[in-house]
Length: 167
Image (cartoon, rainbow, N blue to C red; front, side):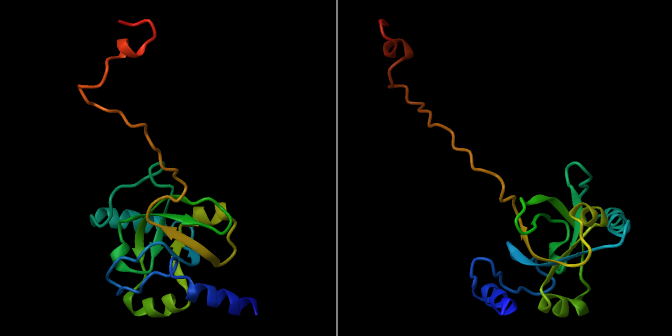
């Protein structure tokens, strides 16, 4: 019953259900699904390879807190934030890899959205796939800052006329 409720909530949630662009285009974010992880050192090796091929920008720690593989080739080189259920979003992660085109449809149908580097998996205590992870293109943790309005009208009174006892 719980599986049915979760499935229906995924299908009927228009805000969290991105479209399904082709494999070569970028994933529409936010997206939600399963996340697994690469073997120890493998994601870093892929990152170094992509750097040598000029396929991704330099994004070493602390600028990026880790690396991620997403399902679409169009995501390569973008920065994303990952949010586990009940946790604050973390990031940015640099997308350094993607699923092979023949594997894409099957992985997407299973709800797979990304794979994280081994260090992130260890930090998160992952023993296997992690469900319901959100992927964001900007950090959802940031609070917008509203600055006061400052008028630059030369006709406004000077400060001396606003101060009690001023001229």
